[in-house]
Image (cartoon, rainbow, N blue to C red):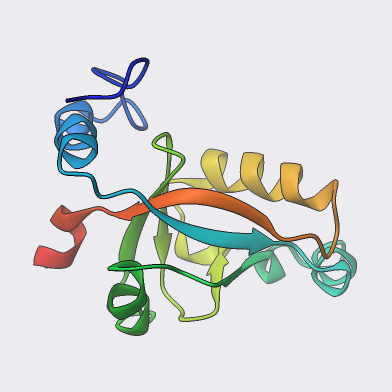
Amino acid sequence: MVRPGFAGRRVNSVPGRHVFLARWLEEGNMQSIKLKVTSRVIEQSGKARNQEQIAISDPTGSLVPAIALATRKNRVRLVLGGAISLELGDTGAIWRVHNPFDEENFDALFGFLSKFPDTEVEFTCAVDSQSMLA
């Protein structure tokens, strides 16, 4: 059964993503990940936006092997909180430079986490299985 409030919600307004999200919730694929922006990154990003990154830690379940495969050339698409879709091209951080088509999502999440420097915030998370097919 789809959880109330999530059925039909579009992820990034990309056609078909809402179908993926509903299927993901029905299959019980609720994993979690902790994210934070460090004070050091905030300081560096003031000099160069390409240094903006969101640190990841403590992934659960099926996120662990997927994240282990992430590289600059083998990106993994994460869906955070059922609403924010970003590409992971590193095993330790989500970089702005890896998300040229999702800069708005990255900037919103980076801005939010920057308000609480060095504080881990836990999000529900899933790997977009379509990103793993490439």
